[in-house]
Image (tube, rainbow, N blue to C red; front, side, top):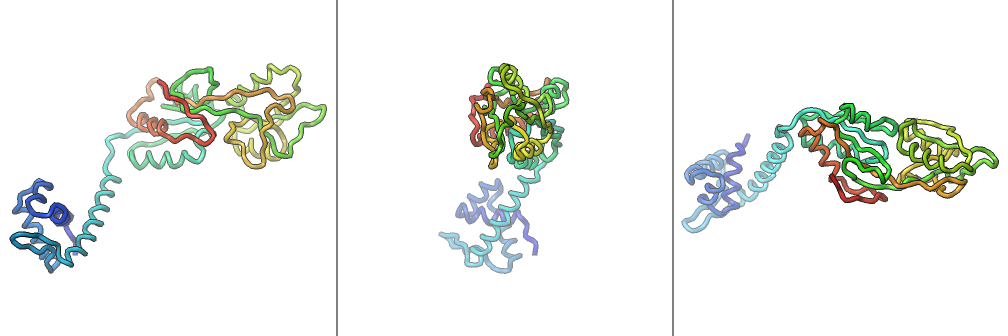
Length: 293
């Protein structure tokens, strides 16, 4: 038998409020309408669900069992309504982010946004070497997370992290030879910052022996012992060591992760997605910064 959710809600309201009058007030109906609904429900079930006297209204034993099922059904229906309720927001969000900002947190973030706004389509660029600032200026992206040195103020500062020189645990610099380095292609901020620091070290002989647009490629080169690279501190993984101060390498600064917007990028759907980014918990090993406009 199929039960009308309206009748189920009437029954639950009577039980929770303790009477027909208060149930009618809760559901914005008349008392006679509630009485009719309960009578119709009992006829469908084929047994009494409520025991009425002049002084009390109690739930029968069958009514207690029925109440448990009715509550579960209504909770499921309410959850389904919330999940599939049409969103008033639609459109496209074009988002750019460097590989090392979100890591494993990006998929659940996208999933959370898709559940809340099913009518919005996402276009996401995840890259270390793509010039996300240029894409923002050209209007190719609505919003992006970018890396910048701490003396550069742009957008909304999200987090700060320290850049380090990293190599394989077994790496040893070749004696009397140029130091091999691995970098992402330009205009990667890691490479720009490292290059600026190296330019100040006239005594250090170095060369780029490996270039890859893929973080996996850079990690493979480092773990293979081919070269030293620049990573954020939290990117250093087992099998690697931080070599700051060794081989004549210069110190590196910290960098900021900032959220920036294109001129016309603050659409309703992009603003909702940007808010989710601002509310992300801090990453391990990354210093949270006070947000600023």
